[in-house]
Image (cartoon, rainbow, N blue to C red):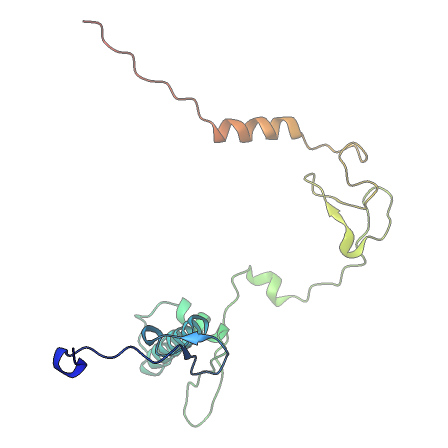
Length: 172
C-alpha cells in the first residue's frame, strides 16, 4: 500500500544518531536525541522555568512563591537582579544556626586518636561512642568503648520485628 493514501509515515532509513553528536542513537520520541541528552535538555528547561518564575516573583514583589525557589535557582547558578540598573545577587540564607555562621569558626588542629594521641588525618575511625581512633584502637575492645552494642542491637531487632498478637475469637 502507498503511505500517502493511508496517512502513515515511512519508517526512517536505518538508525538515527543523536543530534548533539554524542555518538549514541536518538529516537523520534526524544526529538532525535539520545536518552541522556534528552534528560539533560529537560532538566535545563525545568531550571530555566524555575529561574524565570523566581525572577518574576522577585521583580513583582509577590510573596506567594515559596522561599525554596530562589535558593534552588541560586544553587543552579542563576544570578538575580533586583534593580535593572544596579545588578545585585540575592544572598541565600543558610539553614544552620545563625550564631555559628556569623562567627568565624576557629581552625581545629590535626585529628588525633583519642586513645594514643596519634595523628590520623583522613584515615581515622569514628566509633559509636563518639570518639576518633587510629587503626590500632578502632575496635571497641581495644579502647574500652562505653557504648553498649548489645542493648543497641536488641533495640534494633525489637523495632524491626514488633510483636503481633491476634484478637481472641469468641467461642460459640
